[in-house]
Image 1 (cartoon, rainbow, N blue to C red):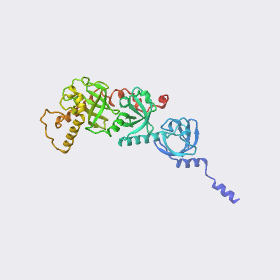
Image 2 (image 1 turned 135 degrees about the vertical axis):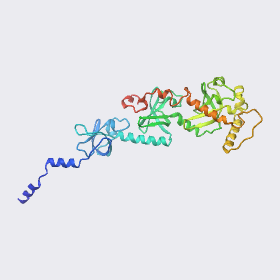
Image 3 (image 1 turned 60 degrees about the horizontal axis):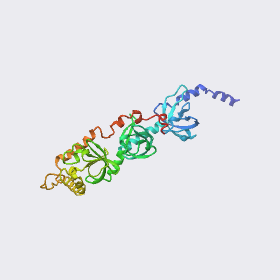
Image 4 (image 1 turned 120 degrees about the vertical axis):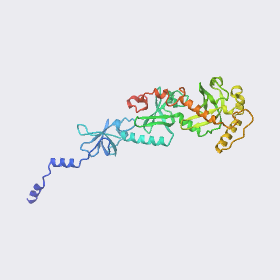
Length: 367
């Protein structure tokens, strides 16, 4: 009897008291927070996650991965505990919406920024092409390769599924732009085996009013019109034809911009030989290149080489204006409207959507 009275006295904890206690210890969840949660129910197009809130949170399938998936069990397993990003506030039913994709997205940009800071070369597979270039994935992010930075003779359509070495041109999370260069990666790899003052065999691949583009082992170098001969030349077409095989000397390697500057002018035994007798220039190329290298070494050591009695040629010490002329040549190429650069029509014509993150459904067919 006494026990029954005690029990009756102790029972004073109502449903309202219990609800008030839950409110007192309820955690406040806000969009942008990262929380731990446990999967307790997988559904066809999403999953219910226990994060300690009054109502189970929900993660839709499109928020489960930075990559495209078809079913939730490709990413989540029942009773699995992991981090989730709170994407939206509670809806009218008190349910929060979660995301894994947003966490992966933030970490991917952080990793890409690190790779760019290290000037790393990455490899990625082409999964789509368009009129402006090609699309790849880097750390799960969609990246764009402008057509002018794809160094291959294949049509862009034939690059589907091909893995390419790439360098970073632009990493901008705020604008969602990830732009890469295949050409820069190839030039850098080639540059590691090249030296200023080295004579190489090349093929004329293109002629422009400002110079000739020479293919040297799969990468393109510029032979500026001012570096063809000591004699004045009106147009490179007067000296070369497309597909001509020629000897050129490397006078500058710019790894940052992915450029190789070339010269035949410095190989001339006498001024104008490239116009009058190019075969003599090619025969004497190694000899003249060695003299050029000697001048570079002497300049680096502050030694003045003796002047020769003949008319000033490529064999005489490099004059002050020569270096400036070479720099002007490079700058002229940078400013020339016909030279393919990142800022040219390939990127300019590419819609913002191409460089930015593109909705999965728009690329479903391409994939």
